[in-house]
Amino acid sequence: MKRKIIALFLTASLAAAALAGCGKVDTTGKEDTQAEETEAVAENEAETESSEEIETVIEEETTQVQSGEEHLLFVNGYDKFFIVDSKGNKVNELDISELQDSEFTEYTGVTPMEYAEGVLYLAGTYYEGDVFCKDIVAYDLESKEHVAAYKVDKEEYVNAVDFYNGKVYVATYDYKGSGDTIRTSEKVLEKDAEALKYTVSDSPLNPVLAKISADVQSDKDGAADNYDFRKCFTRELEENGYLVAYKTGILRIYDENGNETGYPMNEDDYVSIVGYDSDNILINVTRYDIGKTERTLYCFDPKSGEKKLIDDSSKANTILYTDGFLYYYEDLSEEFGINNNHVYRYDPASNTSALIYETRNVPGAVYNPGITGFTVINGEVYFVDVMDRSFKWVRVNYDESGASYTDIYCTLKEIDKLKYGDVEYVSKTVKCPDCDTPLNKEYVEYFVFNDSVAHSAEINAELKAQADLAVENYEDYGTTCEEHLEYPEQFCVTEETRVDNIRFIGENYVSVDRSGYWYGGGAHGMPWAEYILFDLTTGEQKSLRDFYSGSDEDFANLMAEVAVRELETNKEFSNQVYNNEKEAVEASVKESTTLDTVTIRFEDKGVYVEYMPYVLGPFASGFVDLFVSYEELLGRDSL
Ligand SMILES: [Zn+2]
Image 1 (spheres, helix red, strand yellow):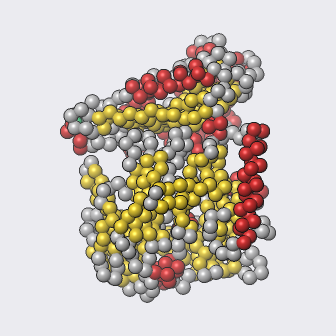
Image 2 (cartoon, rainbow, N blue to C red):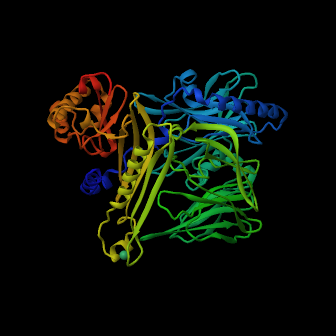
Image 3 (cartoon, rainbow, N blue to C red):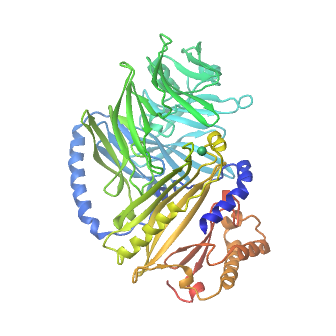
């Protein structure tokens, strides 16, 4: 039922969606960025104690390390972040939400950017009227003082915050010049020796940057989501001897005066610079053709002009070029929905690549295995892995015999649902029998409760049967080989279903929360969510029909009342709907509500009735939720 509705909405709205762009519905990150309910867990106390013991030992060790070099471990989407020394020993553990509540109340959001000499540098965001503003905030971890070290110009975008030679460099870009030409510049923040005070000046390099601004490559591919690896221009010029850019078919190298040396490349190719140092420039060359994309990695030697081939399989994704090595990965999974990432290290000196590790994702956790958080400290690789039912930072140890992963006791988040069981999956790809083009791909996760949950056997059997059915009921567009060979992605229907949460409602019910993403070509696919409720006293699945005594019409009328009430009190709701006049909302809720067509999320005090995108509002509004209490719905205070 649900799938048919989704397909219908999609075909009806494909053209409109393509014009409207992608909106703001976050589907992939839904599970892991959403704060899962934290429960007071007495059973975990023993575990906590032992890890504290280990941490104490490490801290003692840390005091003996006098390296002074400390590093920020931060991944977008997680509150917890860490400062570690050059051996990966935890020096400090911080929490963005806690900091924001206690220290940074004037900001709507803070993002760690750089750490040096006891001071954490964060981007703090806020609104001045409707204008989005950003400060670079310096926060002294010992005194707990903070100050807006640099107020970023409203038209500027911050590209890098880099502590270099005792100063903080903030690299920015803007479009203040003519047309849509990017202008790059740098600010220098100098800290007062005694106090947390900063003097801001223009970088001496700015005249050169102004000269080459339109061309200079300021955002290296591999480091795009890792601020720790973004360097300021001053550092790049001084450490490497030149700056590098790519524009209109020419790889360009600039000296300290902005004088250019050009190396022509193929104009049809899209060239991006992965990273560079004094000896090598690592480039990613992409050629877009109808139906396929070819990607080739090269190592370019600016002294000889020689270009060495690293990989032309089109499968290589670059991660980072650092300390003279390029790290890249290939996903060699043959199952849809599963990543099997092979991470390689390329050494320009020998022009060879070696596999350093491979890893698969744990079902039920949304992350890119072996890649999320990828960082190199002191020549050693760290990333965020799933270990002991948690997202944790690990250090990779590898040699000829293989790789192993060491817990460094920096835990980002527990995956609460894994306390009650495991997530399993079924994956299926249906190919055209004549030409082998994939026409349908299905990935469906299902939960397997452990014995701590009553009637787990019956519940597990039901969940497994539903997953098998979802995979069997595939659909495709019935296209000819000619059509799907030319547009393989547009004519392949894919669907991913993930288990987000396990929630207990009162003592007698458990909800298995799932969400999915359906894609059948076009600008974007269709997200959906589903909450499967089980009665723990019988093991039976329940729906609202089992509790609600009224008719579909009664229910529709009740929801229309709720919607009108919501309109008066909730500005967000009033912004979400197509037309926020009372009569229009009443009519559209009545028209689209039956006990079967809405999604019901059971909670402790009532239910959320969820309307899919496009039902009450445009795609960009996402799911529209209306809360109705059990009191109003069932005449009692709980389910
Ligand atoms: Zn075919």
